[in-house]
Image (cartoon, rainbow, N blue to C red):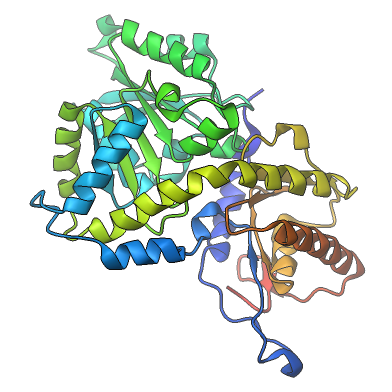
Length: 406
């Protein structure tokens, strides 16, 4: 059965921008106007604020021009990440989207190349089709299973025969995603990754891992991160998701791969100057936050168990492996849009995952008391919606949003 997170993409994407905009201050009763209001932000693990240690590291960073290869903090951080991931070299880039785009284009350096990837993968769904529009790379999708994998036999079947080069694109790359966001933050095992790596190698292909949350996978599986990605020719690692850095991703791979990636980064406008300021924060994030990921996973489990007790929801708490919780609303009177809007009025932020489901994402700045608060607010919001007491404002496209806005 394919991963169902991609089924309602069209309706979801028409609305989800509402939930990404910076929040306007929530109006408060006059008696609370001097109070600081706590907001529990479960939209994503990208919403964290830099820690004091990160800010101090940024202020103290020794910097120079990285485009000229002279920023000492950037060079040191890239060397640390390469060693941590068990690869020869690394490159800091502004975003995960650029990290994946650069990686695919290095491997698929001939226009008309083809990449095999999951139909619910982040590269295919959420990165603006960049591999095609910018790189001329053709995506060959294989259905993602609920656990984020693609069937091995389907991957093999998707590889083009060299004899068909006159008619077909040429397969050059396989992409995996670990953890797999659209499939609920599921982890790909080291055995599965090794098997895909063997297939790639036996067919003369490369393997890229979108490892935006690879450290979450490593912690959840109990497998060192370098061993988990050993079979990969390249890996992108997001620093601003579970790790909590303010900006950036790194690409790791062979020295020859990174030399080519550096040129493409510049071509795409990603060459920046004194990036040691950002790398210093990222280094602090890796040092301080990896050890907290297990606790994020524990809190996600607790949140799922709490949601499971609400009869209007369907959630498989046993399937929560990392820091993501997806749950379906089984009461047809309530939509994810409306529930998220009323939750915002209670200072809990979330985003719909589809026309029937909502996604909560945990991170190290969410406490156990925040989890309890969120559960209480979910129940209150549901009661308000069922009683008709919630204030919802119609939008031009027929959907609704809370009167407080985003």
